[in-house]
Image (cartoon, rainbow over all chains, first blue to last red; front, top):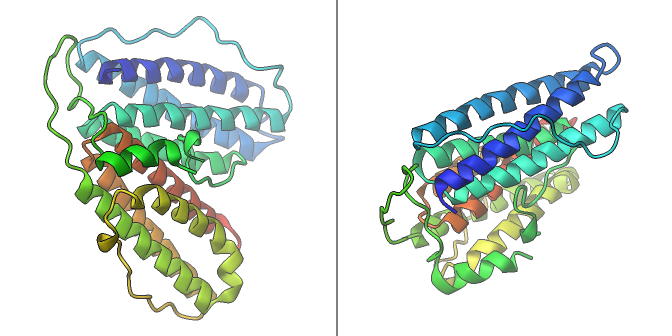
Length: 142
Length: 157
């Protein structure tokens, strides 16, 4: 896999993450669960910025950025706050994994950016009810 | 634990899968430089050994912190186990035990400073690594260190 392939894969994942965050946020009450609402809002903004940066990086590599799908299938019917929080936690765990693959396939500024984003996704899992792990983003090492 | 990656690190000192340098246009045929990662691994191993010594010193100085620091200590021990095989035994560091004040807040601050320094050093190693596989392992260690540091910062003292 080339750096460009890895960038496109992460971009495709980010389209799905952004869609899912949007759905989760729309199903969250700012009044009833303000902490969850704030965590989802911050996550949505981070992933939106990440998607935009990935588009720039792909274009800089001379390719057409992968497009988002019209919609993405969510696992189950997510309505209760614990379900919404768990879904966001899954997004961040998968994002860390995807970004670590980009770290492996890149160097220089792209690797540094992917490392920073992977670290953020790992740390943000704690805001979403997750716990610190030994090998975030690399579960096969556990 | 860690056998999937420990083996290639041990066998070839990171002679694995070097990524292309920077983002290359499609069709580029640039040849990557030969990987020279032994120094990177040795530096991160030394950093982990130092961080573990701080954790141990903090637990000895303030025994009530032991349970709280155990998860990060266990994580770093696992990190060290994966990387140490790539370093000759003679080069494995044995840092002098640091002095940590026997007061809970000072000990916790010493640990946080140590973990922050470790995170910076592991990041540097990740960015310097020629091997993509090694960079990925170091990125995961950095992410783990960031998680544990955040957990220590948010827990009630």
